[in-house]
Length: 467
Ligand SMILES: Nc1nc2c(ncn2[C@@H]2O[C@H](COP(=O)(O)OP(=O)(O)OP(=O)(O)O)[C@@H](O)[C@H]2O)c(=O)[nH]1
Ligand SMILES: [Mg+2]
Image (cartoon, rainbow, N blue to C red; front, side, top):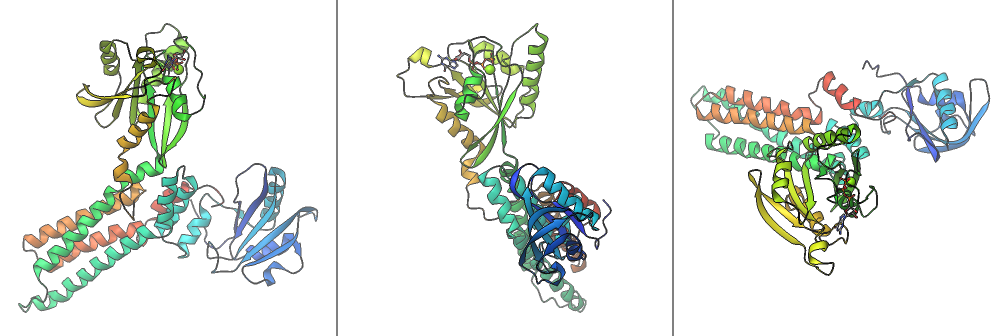
């Protein structure tokens, strides 16, 4: 993406479709002059101070009135991008919005690239890179946890922690370098043990912070859960019971579900992406066979696999079927014995939870009834438990939700590891300081103090247009 930093950009900042209002953003040195060319109000926008709201009409290049609007003026540097900015709130119809956007374009602005407003905010020093990235994850947050983690990042918690560690490391470097001058005369002012302790401490903090990405990723993307098993075992019924909605078709005919179905389920603020699949069996029907192939594929990408069969069914069949699925060691497998109402009667109020050995691991086996709902709650609890709820709710104030950040933190920690080695093998301060500087620059990648055009392009390409 080739970007000139001075031209004026525009985009619709609200989602397409009908709504009460839509907002068109214009940012750049000509934003207010462009506004004057298309806006008729009580006074020119370019003569208005920042943070003022103006009522008026937008007209086209041909002089036709297009809409009655409210225009907000922001003056550089007090705007989102740091540039002069105009936000036009027009009526929220697809046609009107486009007409206003076209008028802005005709008056001299160019269409913004995805994320270009935020990119400018970053380049103009309005926010560090980790906060700019948080804007994108906040917009796409699909659960309470995702929202909170992104917001914390947006508020600068990660940047603050990283900056604090960077400053500490830089100070350490300075000390080592000053000491260098004296050590040539055989005097050392700082204790080796003290330096060692400081480096090791920071290294540990970095590793710990990088480790939070494991749960941070769950916050951000949610957990994928796939329901598989033989036909007619009640997979779709369980899918519906978990969602508390009759989303999937349920019939007594085996082979009812053909294609897979996906729905989101939020439990304890965690997003679970739930998939119902076609029952596993040999089938001569090409449509069903394709559905079954898709069931197997969805197992490959799942974090948690729920295998459902009927309470009275043969355990050997279950072993064979689970053997045929591509389940890895990292994936959780929960076994469900459904339809226990048929065995114990509907009055049974005690779902059974067993631990059994299957496919080289100890698995949880839940006995429940998707029809009466008995035990479904225990399954929901089990899902949250598997994700490691205790770990998730640990009072972690800073959490990493970006892979890029986790990588930079680990890179920083590795350099400190090398520094510790240099120190213990009696290398001179110069070497130790060099390793620490490496760590400092790895951390600088997080806040964007040290960054390449390539990294910026890949980050902002993820954004929506208008942000
Ligand atoms: N008694 C009883 N019947 C159930 C229970 N769960 C499901 N059923 C019934 O079993 C039949 C099959 O249920 P589905 O949910 O369609 O099963 P499925 O595993 O999705 O089946 P396919 O999509 O064909 O693979 C339906 O008649 C359900 O009403 C249960 O807990 N108890
Ligand atoms: Mg089904």
